[in-house]
Length: 250
Image 1 (cartoon, rainbow, N blue to C red):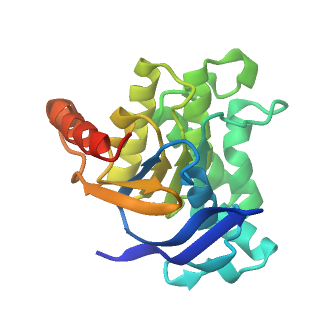
Image 2: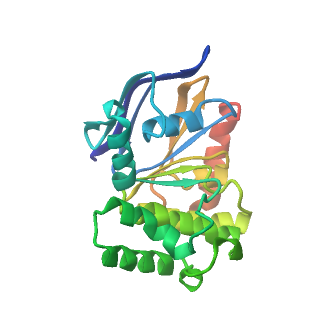
């Protein structure tokens, strides 16, 4: 397997608080990695530092073999736009744009593809995620689940190598969480690497591997295996993960 993301000796602190302490991590191409831990363990900080949304104090982050931790802000913005997708707890869609226009905006900004191709990709993504019927709707006139699906479409419009998620289902009910995670799993099956932060063991049980952070370190990791026939194997995957989490004091 090819390593798509590698983190070496990553450190980050805020004032006198050491949030990340010498983190080392490799993520393989096409892997689905879940990051878990108690509140304040450094989960989101790790996600932001490996995705270039924040800068580590020391250490290196390699994306496809290139050290992105040394890039200036402009170059890092280009990398995020062209090679990464982001889904957060809240959709953060622009209020003055329709669902469709929110989705195509990163594609237009990137310039990797002609606008006609961006629009075609958006149409495919919206159809695949079941929101094509609300493409021209104002974002205030759709459900939370539809907004999150639109956020996923926006994150995928430039065909990123890695999809990052920070509690992507944190504000959704259980049925909508399942729908959104089904989409994310399908994205992963299609070859996109997925890295998410979550506190929900049912969400993490869909990942290939789970790492558990404690006091700024990777305290433990659990390899669950590829997501296949999830509904059939879900109880066993969730049971195994929950037993492991209990051992970590979660």
